[in-house]
Image (cartoon, rainbow, N blue to C red):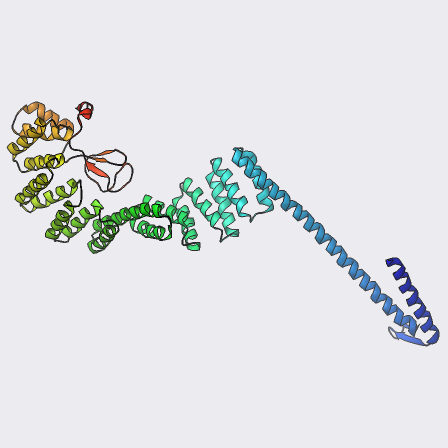
Length: 447
């Protein structure tokens, strides 16, 4: 049909040409130069221009069709490459899951070459390098990917993880900070960045990040844990301020910690210490005495009061306090041990022996009890040399501080601390006073 129409158009044009040529026999002189002139029929000149226009139109159409054909060919090839890249990515991820890291990496590298900006491919390829213990290559892949995907939180999070595992904490922190900038409520990034700051002992910044974690967390159970952690971080930042002499700032932070959890024993102890350093020992004593009634195991508090009273030459005050606490809780064996310790500090040796022998007669004995009683006998020159060797073997200082045990992980600590050195939990150390009978034989092996 198309050919018939085209033939009809050609016949029509030729017919028109011959008709006009017969009706218009005139000649047009076409001057090129003074020496070259051409005499052409008018109709021939008109139709020559018409034919030239048709030829140009046809050529233009042919060029456009050729361009379109090349473009379609290129698009088909690119589409084929993208389909192959997707297939390589799919197979590569499957092999990665199966543990065939080398084959997975080869396929993912091909996929990445075809689709260099695909975040999923970038992250998976970096994972293959990490599994091959090549963290630097993983970091390079992710950094290049971030340049092309500057708003990709997934790439940044993977970069932070790879940098952390490769030991580059600074690069990991930078990546996490960028994630937090892009997504202020990103709990993963906030927690990881907080943990890095804790590891670096940057307590103030860690506490600020923890506040943001607490604001973003929606699970109530997790919120309780995060609140407890915030208390510990505020406490550590207060300790840092105290150590650097910024007592007013320390006071604000420790009060903030106690506002979150008024049952946080280290906070009460530090609050008294800060007040004492500010020159208000009476306020410190009030803080510790008030806190004594709040805790079932107040031994660290009363030890602080004891040091304060002895420093101020007021031993009668602390003796009265010990007796009051023992009357309130007659079965408080730890408090009676600490009273005997105080007697030794005050050189009231007979009182110490009496109290310790009373405990012994009641069937209570243990490591710390033996230490105190041994020292009391030593001062009365009973078993002198043996007691002296025993004392030296223990390696204790002249104050005979009690040891403590973590209620969380069970680790033993020679002196009370706010945070367990083993598990890192705050406010878990309790005094090891009288050991149960079934533990006594094991303790004797220490001598």
